[in-house]
Length: 139
Image (cartoon, rainbow, N blue to C red; front, side):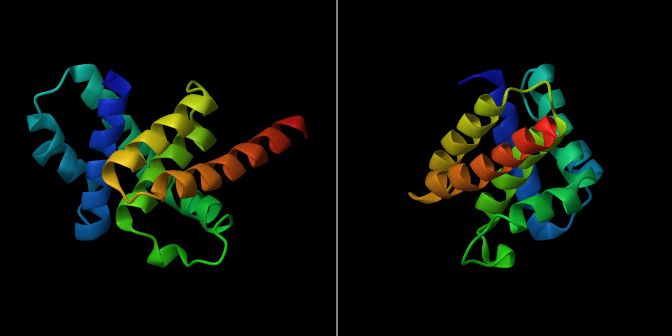
């Protein structure tokens, strides 16, 4: 498994914890991330994802909500919601990460951490966000 995938999985675990426990991400950094036995680069990228996602959560959640059809955002499984969140952060705020990489990584993580159909659902939402990014860049 690649270093970035490890980072994304750690970010998912941290975002999931934040979502359920309402802990501050800086507390999780100190209590969880710093004690992990991973390469420093893995931990740095994981924290960048968590920090960026939390700091832009309102815009990210709006981007996701506006693309969900026939379902309520609050009814999403926490794992799926948080995969969508960090991947949307990458798409919307990280020009240094190729769009196909972000989407493929999110799908693979969903296959490992969520239900059988989660990969397709996540792909559909992220693909719609990707299309909107392309339209905005053309304007």
